[in-house]
Amino acid sequence: MFDLVVVGEGGGPDETNLSAYLFKPAAGPWEEGIVALEAGSGQGTVQKLLQRDPHLFNTPDQPSARTKPYSAAEIYSLVRCFLISHAHLDHVNSLVLSAGSLGGPRKRLCGAKQTLADLESVFADRIWPNLASWNEDDDDHKLLYTLLDMNDAYELLIPNVSVRSFPVSHGHNIGGNYDSTAFFIRYDPTGLEFLFFGDLEPDTLSHSPQTINVWRAAAPKIPTSLSTIFIECSWPSSRSDDTLYGHLKPEHLVHELEVLATEVVKVRNAAQVSGSSARPVRKRQRMNNPPVASPPGDVRGALDGVRVFVIHCKDTLDGAHDRPNQTLIIEQIKALLEPKELGIEILAARQGMRIRI
Ligand SMILES: [Zn+2]
Ligand SMILES: [Zn+2]
Image (cartoon, rainbow, N blue to C red; front, side, top):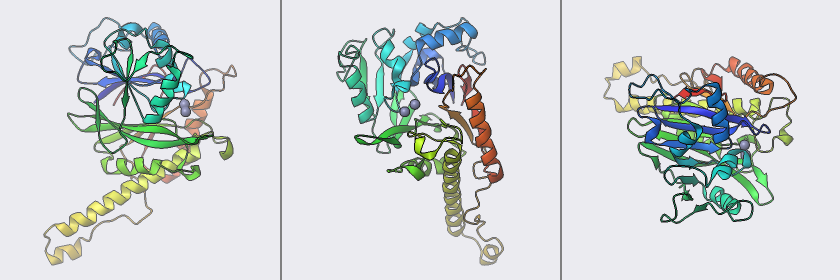
């Protein structure tokens, strides 16, 4: 469905590995248009990733794919749209720094109302030059603000790729609740989707729980048309609930996945019950084959066929080799999930990975 390259997946403070993903439909080449999903890290990081793996953006399983390596500037010139979950710096750093020096046609900057308002305060000729506008007729070098609707509709990002957006709670500030966004990203020709969460806090601790709305929208699609989820887990288990700052730790992520599993079971049970009563079944058969509804609360196997990429793990930068915090967080999630037998697969997103969704 999609080819996705992980430009950065950390949650700070390492400025060389900040939330940023580039993807395109797997059926076509990068030249047909790229969506930049978050833009914490950017061209400089891609340049370094290409020094390590020059063929990161070459897709050898496509007969028409080019074999010559791409440059970072070339890849970013092919971006048609930036899709941003919220305007925290670790999600927009490279978007701001590179605005004005990106090649290629004009690029849209898609986000919720508050996200775009926050970015307007950055592109206001003080912190950074005014390199974005609402005017369709402005110069190509200016990003084009594009407001995302939060009303159930799918909106076209690039040809064949649409997004449906949901607000999720990401803590609060002096102005009140602070929202981030979750995106259902759909390949329109097949209807297959993946789900990507910007930063979020647990519904159980939120003043304004909203993640449940995302799980309810996801449940009927699992796993047939939705089997890949990207979701954060910023902290390890040792972090106290009052110092999460709008993020998840393993206990909360596992609880959120249980909520999803419960919603999936509800949908399946409802479908079985209505399906069995709708069918014209002879009386005796119906007696022999009562609706096989799972007992409420039994969520074992509910998420079979679903894989979750854990993102946004915070770094410690204490000189230890590799990413010990990320490894620890993933181990803790797996240990908590194991006895629950949800059937879900937990994976670490790593910088420089190419993922086929
Ligand atoms: Zn973040
Ligand atoms: Zn954030």
